[in-house]
Length: 79
Image (cartoon, helix red, strand yellow):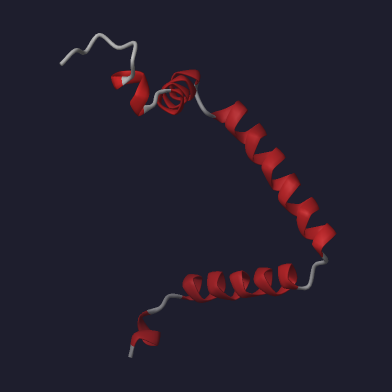
């Protein structure tokens, strides 16, 4: 069956995921909110430290651009 093809690492990872889910489900709402806030802060630090500026600029340009910037009232396109 398929269980025989699973490696030990896969089973360890699945067990760890189940343990983390169990621990998270036992937290209070306040503890969950603190955990999420901490993860967001750490994610922002990770982003600032490890992502090159050229990639940051590429994604901020895409986010700032919208459909109406290209085809809005003040565009150079005329029909």
